Amino acid sequence: MPQPSVQPSPLVRDIMTTVIHTLHLDDSVHSAAQLFEKERFHHVIVLDKHRVFGVVSDRDILKSVSPFVGNPMMERPQDLGTLRKRIHQIMTRKPVTIGPDETVSAAAEKFLSHRVSCLPVVDEQGAILGIVTIRDLVGQLVASPVTA
View (cartoon, rainbow, N blue to C red):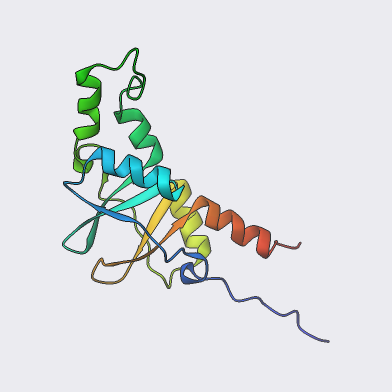
């Protein structure tokens, strides 16, 4: 009787995005906001000496910038000051990371247990290799649906 074929568990390296955008600790919130607007993504990795130091999401930017910025009728000098904040002031420090050879299932567990929406993919030295997001995980499920 033929044995059912077992699909190998996909690895993080199979679904991660390798085109990543990075900022440095002292970059301004304004530069991050411009990058988010230009590139249309949701997370940026913050590096310090080529190692992952933090993560900033588009939601972090929205929370830190005054809602009056860009409104000529309501904008005040202190509102513009919110754009001069440094990334290190709003980023999530010590982000949860994952290795490229871990399984997609392990990534899903990290998303759930740490309540995060992205995982920087790093090598043994902490250098950035890519990023995995909830969107990547959902894409993997759609590409290879589980059959009962």
